[in-house]
Image 1 (cartoon, rainbow, N blue to C red):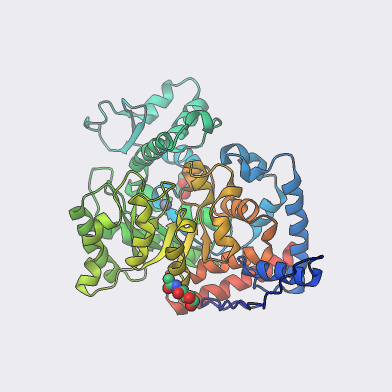
Image 2 (image 1 turned 45 degrees about the horizontal axis):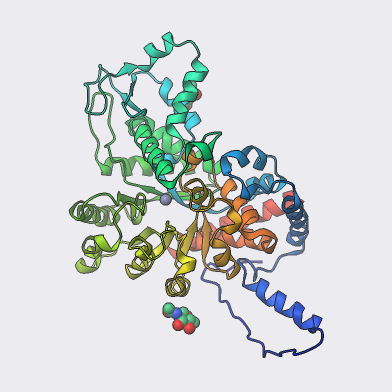
Length: 503
Ligand SMILES: *[C@@H]1O[C@H](CO)[C@@H](O)[C@H](O)[C@H]1NC(C)=O
Ligand SMILES: *[C@@H]1O[C@H](CO)[C@@H](O)[C@H](O)[C@H]1NC(C)=O
Ligand SMILES: [Zn+2]
């Protein structure tokens, strides 16, 4: 069936309620209620073709097996579950399934650390420095770099590697600095504070590698390649276009316009090389630790860049840990700038990535909506805000659900308890994304689809759920409606091939 790209019209028939005061409830009536409730679930209104029904029956059987297995994988920390998920038949199917768009990924964690270490750190002129707080910095330079406040002694990696006994062990230790992935997540990350500290450190450690101009090109290309291999066709990438500016070997610094143009060139090259990839856009982002005046300047700059690069720049976001950062309301003066100036700057705010009920941070969800956000990043707290939830639904403001991120950053441990189960059961607008794939040790969207489908959806979800989630990613993208239609047609084609080859 062809799904409309506009918001689906969901109509619920309220049946006259027949209370049965004694005796057995009417089984027909019971069945009807069960069906009516199921129809509200994400994908509950999707009509499956005969071929799709066949695949769905198979999926249902697999789901039953996974749910009755000794270990239920979404209940285990992802770092431990990952090798087991890779063996799951549902996961293998999800890898083959076209998943539409990735709408919530941060540029500094787009590409797997494996590539960063094995490819990028082996390039010539790469210097490393070990910091006092047990982290690393990288810098490409054509001469010995000057000491900095955080880095006193730079060593050329090539020289260092020549002296090292066990290069594999050394590379593994470098990878440990760039990712959260570990075999003992519960021991290493006893609290949200500890895991977030490591998170911020890893971002900073990767910066010197990624922001080297020649690397940045390859990095974007490689990032698109990893998504494409996982059957993702479009990306909206959150990027500050680097906190540290992009630099050349001789120390020359490039501005954001250069980075945007580079991104555009890479995307054009990638889509030329892979005609079944649709494209990518950027959501400019600024860190919530900064001051109102800095954020104001970032908003002003974003307005300009959005005007000058309408195809590339989708909009604006404020990023960083919500619990310790500043609230959206704190930045109200900066965020109302576009409206005050009478110009458009679409917002895609992170909001409600918190379990701190009733705090100022907890109000970010409502404030995001008051500032007309187009989507809500995470919205982990949304289920507890009935009014904000209504507004989000009524205005088709989709929630970007990143289950693995929420688990690794310790908002929830057993994904069956994720609040998005409520949203999914009532068909709230949702898309699935991966947030920081390299930090969590994922690539593409298949792992997060697995967790959302098996862990959060369970036996309530079916092939229609998967299809709706994938279609949602195009429907709720920032693309203009004509482009959405083109992307939708492309998706349908991929979907039909998937169904035909899966059986
Ligand atoms: C590193 O990556 C670049 C670009 O993706 C590629 O051309 C090159 O062959 C890679 N080098 C190694 C050693 O893997
Ligand atoms: C959302 O829409 C429903 C149905 O049209 C309406 O009853 C409700 O008042 C709306 N809620 C908000 C918060 O706008
Ligand atoms: Zn995020």
